Structure formats: C-alpha cells, structure tokens
Length: 200
Image (cartoon, rainbow, N blue to C red; front, side):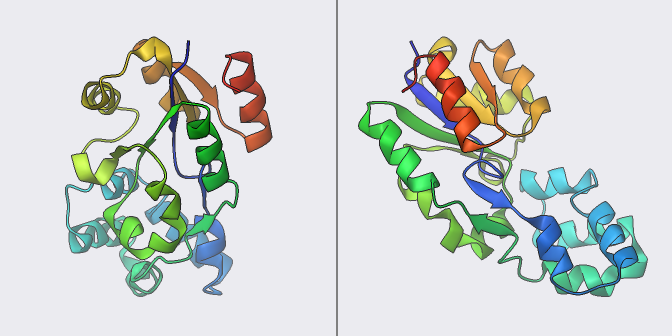
C-alpha cells in the first residue's frame, strides 16, 4: 500500500520554462541555440543543480562552454525569475493528497539561484511534508545517493512510495530501490496512473 507520494518539481509541480525565458530576451536564433547548449544542454547544468559551486563558479563553467556569448550569459542568468512558471494545480493537488492521509515529499534537482530568484512560484513547498532539493545536499538525480538519502531521512519503506518525474532516466534508480514510479507527462495522466496503484 502506498503511503508516500514523492514529486519532482520541474515540469511536474511548476513549469521549467527555460526556452520561453531565453527567447524573451529577443536574441537571434543562433544566440538562443548557443545559450541553450552552454547552459541547460550541458553537463554544467547538473553542477548548477548540485549546489557545490558558487554562482560565479557556475557562471565561469557556462562561459567556458561558449566564451563568445559571455555578455548574453550574464544578462540572462543575472536573475532567472521567469524561468520557472506556476502550475495552479500544485497546491490543491498536494492538499488533496494530504487530506487523504498521504505523506507528500519533493525530490528535485534544483539550483540555489532558482530557489532564490523564483521563490514566488515555489509557494507549494509550504504545503509538502519535506523532501530534498539537490543544492542543499550536494547530490543530484539520477545518482543513487539522492534516493537513498531521501529514504533514510524520512524513514521510508520503498514499496510504500511512488515517485513522479518527467525525466525518464530518473525513474530506474528509484525502481532499483523498490519504489513505484510514474513517468509524468501531465496531471491527468499521472492521476490515472496513481489510481491504478490505489492512490485516489
């Protein structure tokens, strides 16, 4: 029987709208593509989420990926308010699950800068029972350590947990620990899959 519902954040409880955000600056398509490749499309983005480096060290990594767009990188990443967008269903969904007796946690690759700059979109965090944001513990999905840490910290039995994530590669490590998983595409699909597991 499932007792704990674990949510990823980006594109599950809030929209990770990096593409719209970068395009909002009005750069030519070539610059947009280079920005994407140097940031979210690079391995450096995972280090951004890990939180072990300072904002300036992370910026240096991004600039190192494409020195020719340093000006644009600094302009777009100075304050990233707008890169995360609100999903109006997040708080009611969390409240509904908690009202039915489920423990609700988050497990997300999340950068300290995003946490600070996008605070207004993260108000749903006040409603969950806890969880792990990667920058706080310096560990990221799909590394097994982050799943182990979540289970140990909250005394979870994996077979009593279901984990929802929009990124498919983050699911097998959770399954390896014995958790149920849902590859999140949209809320309606996820609710249907949860129902099949007895989460209603």
